Length: 313
Length: 296
Image (cartoon, rainbow over all chains, first blue to last red):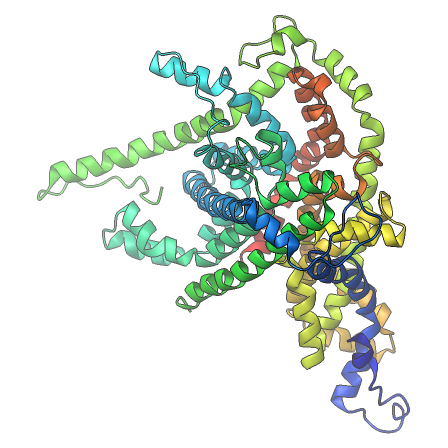
């Protein structure tokens, strides 16, 4: 592509004599070789590995063999047979949706509570950004301790209810996926909060004043005016939350490692585990599955969210 | 909050109603700070106090982390232990080297490309732009990256992981910067061009200085991701180079430390400090940078 772009180079000779044509001038003023380093890095470290994915997913590449042979759909078949392909796709999808919902819900609530520019609120906003700055792995280990059956969370619940509580929050094959997505949302809610705060600031005070004079309640103003006007912030937050959690690894690895019984095994956890076992082709197949899932889901989601914004203009 | 504390005149029609409204707004003014403080205490105070208290305990006390303060603080001793056993000094410099090099490279190469992509028109440019920003959405092919790095002789090296991060975040930088360059009037460049300045000079002297705020936003976000990344680091440099999150992973997952919550939490405090301090000192800039970059 770069070669094609730099091919036409008119105007060098004509420079002094005649006024250069507009396009020729443009090309020279912004030479295509500026693109080359970035494009080269993208090709080597992004596009080639992605293309490799489409090839090595259909081989028997592993650490146990010296040669790599074409294996057709063997990997897909065996991953379908042992159920991990569909189960992990489903887990990743559930995790991503739950994270997007919780992270935006918490972020929006925090933004509404801390909206006024008081000293306490400013300090609280800074405090809620601390988890965003921390390592996700560290956050995972902290909550692993908090949520132990004999941990702090159960102790607090016990004090409130006056009974002994020893719920294994990270030990349920049904509910632990919800718990880990809540942890993920806890880590990132400060970022969503900031974006929502910025979105709330852009809403004109005239509109809000008009609504107040018309006697609209706080809740009605939020639902009918502020929430629709937050569309760009929602787009950004939902899209980043979905993408971030579909590529999730750290928090789940640190809290459950994919368990119990594989019920929180995200695609990335599977890829990491199988890669460690030397089953490179299977890991690649899962990596391809993740790639395809994100490609198939991301574009419609972003288009849908953008459409919602268009209604406003 | 939008209901400001207007002293409502008691109209004759509905005295009860307006009195109620006056009360709610007053209550809300008192309630809001209380709610803010309660949220901070519950959602952040409890987990963070748990980390600090546990990191100050000895192993027996820390066996089951709870909110009780340690009978005897030994925070510094625990810090010293993990400092040595977690190889914190090489890990810190490993993390720093990888972060600084990746961020510098991705910003320099990304803004160069973004300038051209923003200024030139045509089908070719549109295609290059679409491909260049596709990485914002598409996940990197982590397994085959390792294979490619092996073929290039970069597996397990700092150069390898830096290349991976630069490739991963190039799209983000190009997207942010291209959008911003389009808002810079081309006339600014023309003036210098008439004086005979070369493209590289125009880029360095005119465009680059104007990119400050946008680049700052991208820098903050990419620094956060690179400094804290463990997933890609595990694949590319796991076991061969030290970084802070990699060493935390080793400290925490090795059987030796399984019951050593005091050491895990001491490590977490130490590894979080560099970014935390940077954030606290620059919070105003960081927060305004992120918010101005996102909602557009």
